[in-house]
Image (cartoon, rainbow, N blue to C red; front, side):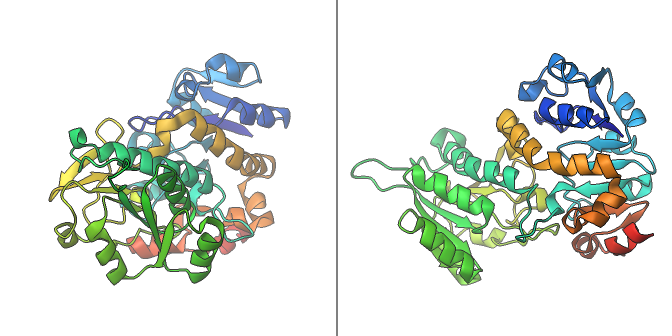
Length: 372
């Protein structure tokens, strides 16, 4: 198979879809790897690193899209990239379609087959291709939140760990999954007073067993959230409904109950955000203020630590990428129901229920598609 990796063009996105190690594995199996020149520079991989393992460097994204059978990326294809997709081509990347009707309709119109990293599953009910970026984003959230909390950036001017005689920042983490757990660990490690909210009692028991004493946890209800945010210096939104739009957990009206200069960090912004006042921002202009509350809503947070993120993502995606290349997408999905769960679009048909529900589009069963 011809596997193509274009340079990411979303603003301040420095990650790359294939590491040289992944390219080497693919070449060793007899596949051709085509890399757009400079695609890996933001992650510290120059063209020579790819050439050394047998990949071919081309000058433009147009060449990559025109030549490759499978396109491997990080972020969802931008409008100019979607125009280059063609019928029968395989796209393997993050998509986050539920809050993005324009992208969804363009992918359907292209006739391509699109497998989304964020909906591939595993035998434990987890999301193995989302998990590494969730870990990165979770660990970043308290860091960027503490920066936003500084007075010069519009925040309350509160130090996360406090100092002797002055109490620490109060941090509320909504969601106790991968993002929330890593966010809580780092925030607690910075000395903050941390409370994690979640609706799964087994998850709360796990957090208590493993991290009891490092941070508190509480069952998540609208009332509990409303009460805790009144005293919070920082709220980290870390909720996820796989493939679906994120629920809105803090309304604009509730901002008036929060301390002026408090910070909202919305890690769910890729799925539409979990605060009513959230809107996607970039690393170039990451924060904004609504009703005295600072918002950090960067849609590609892991891009800030591109090398760590690229290597972590490559470790997770490589086995699936190789299976798709070795077998073709249809056989690979027939052999692996967890990979099949990643199928979102095929030949003008939507194949992921949560996206169809969010956007009001009819959905075809992915199992039926692979049998056709």
